[in-house]
Length: 103
Length: 244
Image (cartoon, rainbow over all chains, first blue to last red; front, side, top):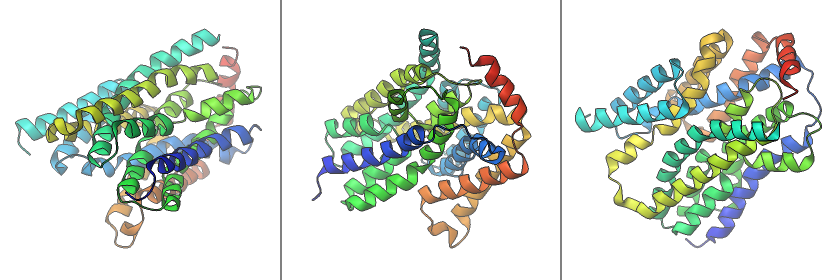
């Protein structure tokens, strides 16, 4: 590593904070456009869904265990379990499929 | 009602903090095995507070990429926070002072944004501070624990832990999809579009950060065009809860 790790960290943290801070500080006016309002309402769902699938399928040691983890998380989320419960159930499912069933 | 908002944030932040602990544990392990010191791994988590961006940044540090590459990668992967902050800015009351906006900004993560966006009506900055008070220690201490235990943890445990963050994402997006067909369409549509990027030749070359941005803009844009959110109902909700 020829570069300075602390400069990397400074660049990472600086860029990330600016992205978060500028819209909060600069856009204080109430938005009236129904399109923009609707767009901002849908952004988190679109963004989190895109980050989850298909990335989840390559997150674990095998596609089979990942698919089972995904299915279990979907069901648990559908039953409106808490964030942590859903996460732990998905982890447990992956663990069972990989260690006990041997996929 | 600051105390009440703060306590509600703390309570809603607990599952996030625990989930973060599990995910950042993996980050700590990977950082130390990539050659960083424990202190550096913890410093990254404390100052960045983001999952995808940190994992990508770690790769660049280990590969000794340029500082520009680091800045550009963070910009692309974390550009979604820009959209979230923009949306959150609308949820805060207009008279919330500047200092609060600078502080709230530090805690704009997928999950904290998720819970504050799901609050009815306007949201108090103290709600976000409550959630941050649990989420930031969870993320930082998880990194510390992972960095210390290094490679002691067996591979199957690491494999099981790495679905935790996706489980959390699903827990945020699935329940609203049950009651709103438009949200369901957005969730399914986004997963389909990002899957196209994973399998179609040519599209496969697009980096993962760009895939998320393009998918989000396309799907949320289409949904806003075809299924505009009805204004009156949100106005009513805001009017009803804004006193709290």
